[in-house]
Length: 253
Image (cartoon, rainbow, N blue to C red):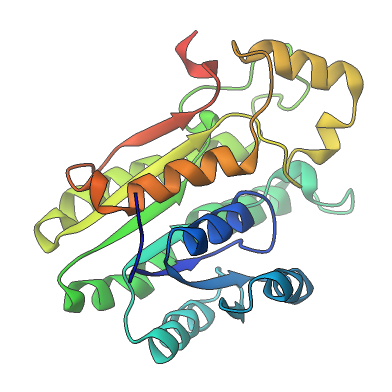
């Protein structure tokens, strides 16, 4: 598997799955633009990977998404791959954020952000003769929160946002297949990232989460990044419109 001579933008690259994916892509030979709203996180990444282009921006702002693409093409001459890893969870918003604002924020980043970044890249990929878009869904794209977890009363916006990401993936995949643009989603189980930190640090919740995964543990960001690298490579040339679970067996139950 190699991404040699491929050019990729990875959003949410400052931490978690996005950061692990940016690192994996560089290791596989890709030229990478690491994008994030957190400038300090990007600067920290660039200290160890100075070959990466870094760009600070907000995926919910259309002008920012266009700038990310323009800067990438100016730096590397083309764009082949987009990984939409930027995302938020309602539990990571402060207590001052009310119910409706939580919904708006999660849908804005997870759904609109994925759409705007994808929209900004498609014309460039068409002019190259093809490309690859990878969207980060979740196991909550496919199932609801179990009643053994204290994460939802049925009104948590996260499953809805990630379900929309998978459906958006399918629709794009069908419509863009004739342009040789492949679109897939990755649906991770619970992974040790900043998004899960607030719950994995509670021992009883952490234990419950581990037991919910048949493999008896949570995932690591690098394990998700490995699948992203495969989907972005030519080895996945006949794969499009799919939702790949990387969940230690969670959704197989």
